[in-house]
Amino acid sequence: MVGRCIVGHDVFASELVIRAEREGVRVREIPVELAEKRAPSVRLLRRVPKVLHNLGRLMAAIHLGVGRREDG
Image (cartoon, rainbow, N blue to C red; front, side, top):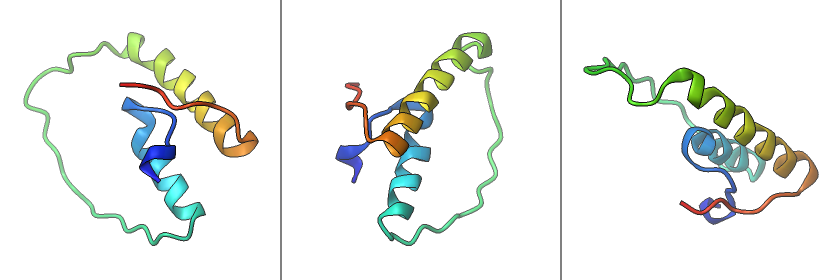
């Protein structure tokens, strides 16, 4: 299932959960509390366009069956 995922980085976990649920794999949530100890290394204004692009790719892959795996 991981090998069929096409997006990486920010959206990978979401894609993995979507694919698992669609294939009938039982998915359980485990609540975790995190405390940031340092400032983020990626600026939000640089990150948002990349995330939106990857969400578009994920939607196309899931709903239309198009897309190829992202290396890296």
